[in-house]
Length: 464
Image (cartoon, rainbow, N blue to C red):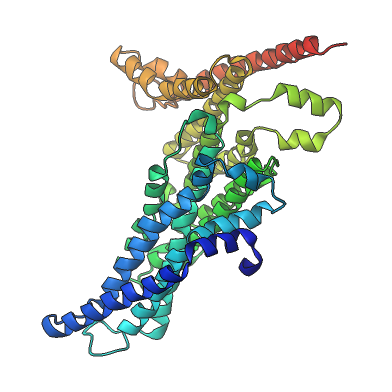
């Protein structure tokens, strides 16, 4: 509970001082009354709800996002974070205390805004479109959900960067604040859209844009909070279970699968959920791969845990990027089968492209892991270099080959299907599949030899 959370209590005592508790309602009520009298004299329509919404946005998306982003960074910069890491508090306790304690004053002001917002539709002749009590409470719930998400996101990104603190001499929260402020975009869509319009078919039921935003926001809040707890575990010297990353990716797949519309005769509409799930999980996997490239494989620890039969620890230190690979492979098979079921050439060609994407992904994994085994020098450089090399193989190199009038060679650097160009259908299939398979095979063999060589070096360094 919040009232028994020492981190929350500490932040609340810091934020909710008597002077601040008095100042907030005085400011909001004064501004509300002044606007109320002015609107009655010179305006045909009341602007009280707009004023309350304005203060809510300023408090939540400008002020609150900054407080959430800097709650840990401020302690890092002042060298007080290490004392917290030595406390007996559980990571989940620290996460709740940091998230809701640092923004306690913001939410104090927000709830005053919510009360005034509710009263705006029940006092005087406002000239506003009437809203029922249920609709008003629904709006307030929407404000709370998106406000919490706006505070969770910058805190999560800040904690992730803190893990790489050796890259930075000093932390700045402005970037993380802007990431949190981006949550105001779905709020605008939710308020401006038709509340009753059935815009999305999800698992056979129609939902409005507003309802879908709330569903997705709640899911993101839950998983973002779990991610914050895992990041704090890292800071406290605890190794979080990697299964949470897999479950997050699986939940993304479950949500996106609901958008499939099997009644449509158009492949991309029928299987839009499967396609989105495949590409989203593929993107998440590449992000995790790029984030751990300099430490993807830890042969010293792997050999130690394997020899001592500590298989649980061996599982704990496995590269996070590998965890979602089985899920991508399953999605690829499902996607290939779904598009092939239409029986036309377009569906089959898409299936071959998906097949090629899988081998390109496996090729990139082998390259990054091989690079990380023998990377020397600055850790920042060894992390960035392989990521840029991979990026170049999908951007710069294909463009250069196209300019050199060597388009066929592009099949070695990005998924390409040449149907109806200058090759037969079978030749196009061969050119789509064979190049990435060859590249993967070569890099996989090199990776196996590299791991064996690295383990041999480690064994030589161990005193007899």
